[in-house]
Length: 312
Ligand code: A2R
Image (cartoon, rainbow, N blue to C red; front, side, top):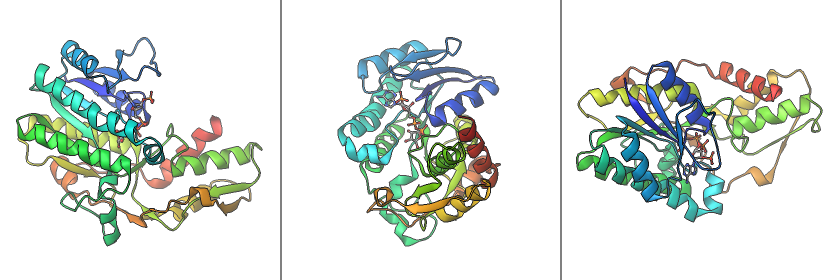
């Protein structure tokens, strides 16, 4: 049985991950930021990851065998609005955790959730990126994740055990409507409920992205945590479907699941000047190392997403 310290446990991925770890019979200690609380029956502590002393105390007290580090500022526009908060949380927060692990539980295995955003400009090659591709971040979020990756790799070099995951676009119920598929599904549900006119606002529909069901991402994290029991061959793993999907295709699939006639309108506010036309990952390393395969088809995930927003 693992004892996993799960940071960011109340986030989009954290909620699903918690359930997966519990189902697998592991003990989980969740950390949540002081603003968000979990039910009493979930073992949790309030922790601001930027507070070095508090992070040290939690790790010393919990003594996890594994750490899954999800806590972060995860939204690109927020990172532009508040780069200082982004760097303090994503970089210094990670360093606080690394130092605490090194000091109190040096044998623990750490999984850091980075992001496919680290490839940035390199996506312009128009081919799926693998882990050896250049990393050329194009926003403060991506830059902070890459900086944190460098910190993790340095601690790994000094003997700490662990891996870095670079998840591509993960989607599903519970995601903030700041993200594209949730935004579409929420708007369709609101139109169906008569809460907004039959006009759906969109950004760039031509961009191609690599979409994964959040459950498949969590399954990949479960398998990556199991690498603790094997010799460390690789440190960095893309978590990707390897399939390019145009945003237009995703929108069409969602619209096909609604019986209402809906007009699609482009909102200039939703177009990002630095938008990357093609962002797809090569996941062969993860597949070869863990046997992971995505289990959820995009159509199924989009159906569940729409059902979630219809019930909300
Ligand atoms: O804002 P809250 O209360 O929901 O907490 C967020 C938490 N978080 C923090 N926790 C401790 N100390 C902080 N200073 C702090 N700032 C933010 O991180 C939230 O629960 C969690 C991140 O969850 P989401 O924003 O929903 O991200 P998601 O999609 O679950 O992604 C998980 C990880 C992130 O590191 C991404 O950058 C990565 O996967 O790709």
